Amino acid sequence: MDLHSTEIRVGDGDFVSQMTRMREWLDSRRVEPAVFRYDHVDSSVIIRVDFAAEDAASAFAREFHGKLLR
Image (cartoon, rainbow, N blue to C red; front, side, top):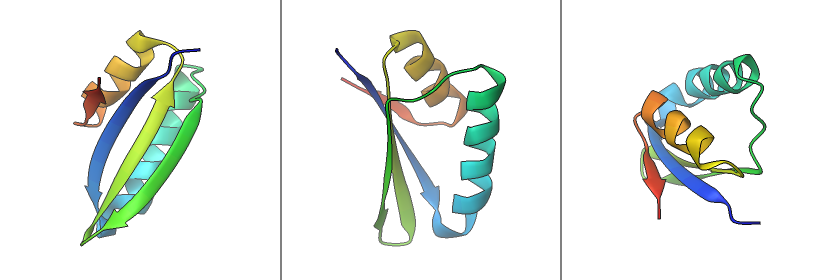
């Protein structure tokens, strides 16, 4: 299965609120990501979310001002 990866960068202080927004967004669209992980980098958090469907990955990246990784 090919996965479509997104990357979103948020500030440490925004992490909890952004995670809540992401969960609400996913739930409202009945989308379940294949992989969800994050790493702290400096004063930011890099969130990587992988989706089975490219359209879901693209919409997620747009909604959260991230990028679709190729």
